[in-house]
Image (cartoon, rainbow, N blue to C red; front, side, top):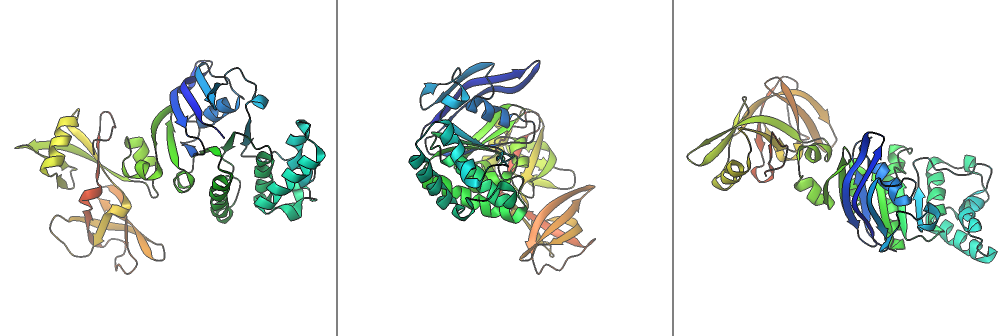
Amino acid sequence: MAEVELQHVTKRFGTVEAVKDVSLKVIDKEFLTLLGPSGCGKTTVLRMISGLETPTSGDIFIGGKRVNDVSPRDRDIAMVFQSYALYPHMTVYDNLAFPLKIKKKRKDEISKRVKEAATLLGIDKYLKRKPKELSGGEQQRVALGRAIVRNPQVFLMDEPLSNLDAKLRVHMRAELIRLQKELATTLIYVTHDQLEAMTMSDRIAIIEAGKLIQLDNPQGIYRKPANLFVAGFVGSPAMNFFDCSLVSKDGLAMLDAGTFTYELDTELSKLVIDEATSGEAILGVRPADIAIRLEKRENSIPAEVYVVEPLGDQLLVDFKLGASVYKAFGPADLRAGIGDKVFIEFNREKIHIFDKKTERAIV
């Protein structure tokens, strides 16, 4: 297997700059996910690695070799697409064997590698069937098997689970994690689903408008988002954002959201005062980091219940502050209904503060 490295890669389609000066290194045997909204450029990055698109500028290396001018078939990569791209007139065996037949491998070697891949994926009993006789999950396994038999340096996957139902996606996520570790292969995965990225990846590269915004492991992305976009994109439900004025007095800072004020301690105050580029900031708090209570406590903020969504072992509570609605998790036995008054508290250890002008994370 091999490292993959992009050095200052840019891709333009006419006047549209789809990928903007992206540099990143995918470590050997790593599961790296390119995550971002539709149209952000992540698939274009994957297609340039595969050779299906040529960079306008910059260099791509696979296994230490510059591959800008190397054809896709000679890059020793295998790609699994959103559409499974199986040959409908061929059996599962022939679909799996096809890339090996193209390379003119011996029949006994083809048979051995096909059966090994089929056994690994649990599709060995379907080898004589046609794709139309398989379920969506089984077809996905065949598409994976066709990539595995080639034993490539790098696997590239472009939203391979998006056509599956929710239950099957959860199952296939676990299968892909297991498979990648068993094969000890380098895998680059594209998705717009942050849950897929968070549960499967060794590291995540967040792409926005063609730019690489943040590269980190899932916990780093979740706990220390680089900017407002990452904070709002990763996490379900999304992070709550409160527009605030930044007020400082006697070296201490306070965030004034209009409906409430939030005082910062000495250490945070110094950091925010030093880093802020204007008198406005955004306070970010994830729903899991907000406590909801029926009784007022010191520093709690009065709010109104907008709607309650039961989730079994807990509640998702939409609450109103002024004219805006935010989300928090509450205990399943919380006795609160629409219109009731509640009190919220932020976990001071897990708040986020963003510069409103630059949208960059300060805390």
